[in-house]
Image (cartoon, rainbow, N blue to C red):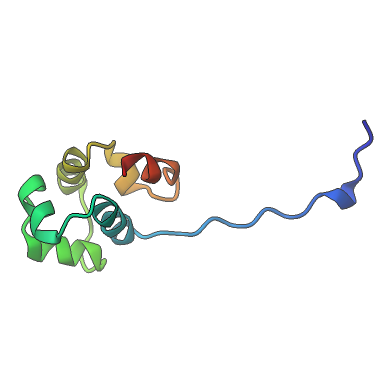
Length: 91
């Protein structure tokens, strides 16, 4: 098998998502409102809005609460650039 370097193209970069965008995406994939996620996670709708809009840092405790609500590993929320494949599985 002959490999020609001209047959290769640079890989496209992956979309970078913020933690807030991941939370919103997961919530929308589940078709939940912020109020419904608030009930499921124990985080107030006001705090969920702040998280989704990246106005506050997530923190370990909140990531764990959201992960339990979404039935996913907290790393998917806290480190979206490494765990992008987990987003589709969470739907």
